[in-house]
Figure 1 (cartoon, helix red, strand yellow):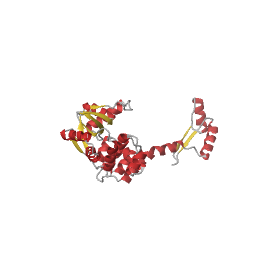
Figure 2 (cartoon, one colour):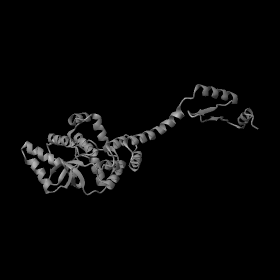
Figure 3 (tube, one colour):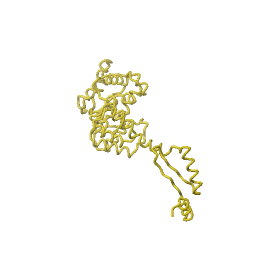
Figure 4 (tube, helix red, strand yellow):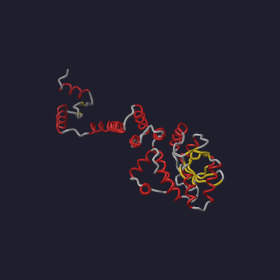
Length: 297
């Protein structure tokens, strides 16, 4: 989607020109150009926003993310605001920034914003989303940027880009997939349909298992969805068989056996006709009584 570049003299010059120009059209074009670039910035020169509402971060999940980033890199760039010189202030992506530092990355990808460019940034992002060459992950990242940086809800974003709210939600959910799956979407190994189906699974381990089967067996979206349904229905079927109330005839037989043997008999029978009869006893006398009634020597 965007061309990665170091924060070089050319990019610094672009930032300076945006701040200096008083021409709205020229400023809009410069912001648009900046929006299409992903810079590589050292985490050491990025200040955390003091107004960041989130203060608690799950240490274990941060370690998991750091491990993924160390292996696959940072897939979704953070967003920073240029403060002048070589310093920047974080706008969104503190969790990714923290995990990148834990992973020991010297440079991380970042979108750079300048002050007072909210409206033009929104226009540039919306225009960027309309491009036909974006993959599903790039669209998802653009949607997330619009919500994070322009304070838009799913509904407001839906109005801005002319897409159904459900479509927006489906794209955003891609960013919650494990890094390995996000990389597969970015590289074209996994389609939007496959990714959307996998995003509906809560367990990351199950997501990765089905993802591997999908790739290895070249499963279609429909086949992947069927595999997910089969895995989710298995435990439900087992539970239904076990928890289903016994029929009236089984209840009657249970009562008759309990009366005959003088103990509480349990009769378990599933839909397939398989089952068991349990005759509990508390001592040898009760055990021998049961054997006598069954005419067992």
